Length: 301
Image 1 (tube, rainbow, N blue to C red):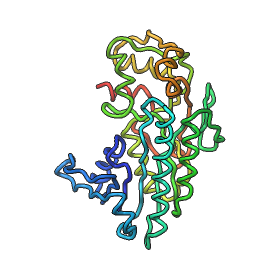
Image 2: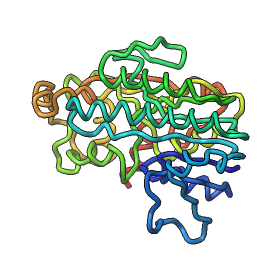
Image 3: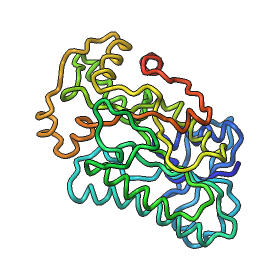
Image 4: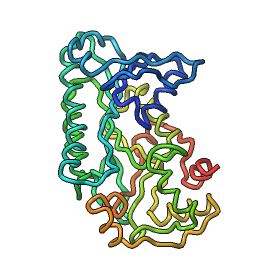
């Protein structure tokens, strides 16, 4: 398979690139600036790079690819000032808009686009569990951002569009998990806020595997909940992490303290969703780490 990968230099993108190359796929990474050198396994073929400007100048140079994966987006792990919020939204909308424009100008466009999205568009949940049939009910800035992100992706003229509604992607290095793990390493872990908010999670290995699954399985399209089939609360996640690390789960962080320190960004940890990957399960996808305890044991080794 020949794949275009937008956002291939990020946390998920690097792991996906390695997996694609490992199975013999040809990977072209669309990036703002070509790297001087890439740190990939010398035993594997290396990805090729093309800039957004080069693609814009001649969209047809990338005709004939089988699929495209778009993981592009400004990080949400920053204080949400008005300017930062604008960057977060525009980076996602703009990437989808550019992809749409360039695909329209390609003689042989990719048949499938897998576009990143977020689980937060369902709104906040207590005990309610969301699947792909649940209504879209954004309740905060991040939820509104995801709605606009998916609307931009829906305008990409492609035969099959997959929208990955991604939760917390857990890996030993990279992403948010090392920051979540840090208080437990210092014996200061505990619930955040009241601890009842949902915390949708997935192991990085399964995240990469399900992207490959969506690329290969022509019957999958539309929204896909990219989360593990084990919905838990913030408190349950923390207790399991403490057990995996052999650390106490005892030091709660009050919600008002986070709101004072982080401002609006505190909604990232004080609210959440419980979700199920119903579409993946219905199509026979097998998770390597379907249970939280198994995933955390692996990540804590």
